[in-house]
Amino acid sequence: MTVIWAHDHRFYHYNSKVYSKVEFPSTLWERYLKFTPTLKVISRLYELDKNDIQHIKNFNVSSSPNVHFMGVDYSGKALDYLKDYQSIKKNVSNEIKKANKVIVRLPSLIGTVVGFEALKQKKPLSIELVGDPWDAYTNLPSKSAKIYATLIYWQTKKIVEKANQVLYVTKSYLQKRYPNSSSDNINASNVNIKISHRIPKKLEKRNKQQIGTIAFLSPYKGIDTAIEALARLNESNSTDYYLTILGTGERKQYEDLAARLGVLNFLKFKSLPSGQPVLDWLDSLDIYIQPSRTEGLPRGLVEAMSRGIPSVGSNAGGIPELLPEENVFNMGDSTQLQKKIQDLLSDEDKYFSVSQANLNKVKEYDSEYLRKKRDVFYKKFLEGEYNEHI
Image (cartoon, rainbow, N blue to C red; front, side, top):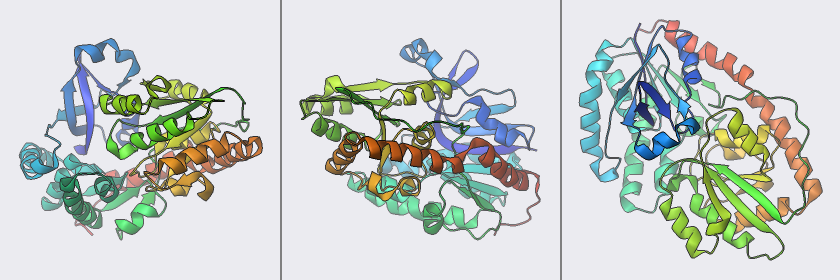
């Protein structure tokens, strides 16, 4: 059996191995390989540049003996959408003809093209819906992005509606906006963490406070909001607040913003492989923030909560499903974010109770519990028989 998995993720090829700068370790593919002998990954695939090779130990090895990667490139510009769509379609159409079943992760342009082609060719189609493209593009400043939002929203809605099965990462948010009537749908976060017993974290009063977030460096992640909040926090003379961003991407615009606001020395960027290195870094934080403008259910926030780190997040996507209302701020509002950070870091009792609440809430996202849910989902899709789409 030939199974395709498609998404826009950036993978990198070097010395016969495939790497990912964030997430997507080789262990991810095990959830599919339990039910199919091989998997074909259609995504973006580039060669590592010289600078990246020096930091290769910080990346995840994505290669697996039974996983074959196929690279599809495109411009990524909203104005080139039609040209990119046709180019991707030309590259993937024949691969879909040879496939028995198709899994696409949305939102993504490659996933969208592959999804529509699978429907057209009457191939069984499963969706992993991990975010909301409507929120993603309507919250960007450009007019072209807002126009694009309408198109990608309609396309995502249509693909999800017609898919055989859908895995939603939220409990209700994405289900309401992108419905599907299959009885085989599930909600399961794409996190993969083992929840262990931990004691709630106590606030350590000190003159340096460490704030962190995990985010690809893009406008979607609200990094500008975080830096603006950092500047407001550091107007106080009694405490220095440091923000570390764990993620890759183009830093310059954020470094320029931090410089203009006078907090460049309080901002750090970091990259680490998935797993224990990330958890160890989270343990060094006083508070975790998720200032995103769009989200499904953020893995980084769940991981932080699993370590008992008090957290603050925006009201984007499924974030309010994770955090109590008092720890949620309106996306883009740096003043609200700054106040909520300060409230937590100035009240020992509240800090401890939020840490305890996080540890209780995150039990719902234990890797073993979610693995069982996913196994039922993928077993049904990959070993089941489908004659037509819903």
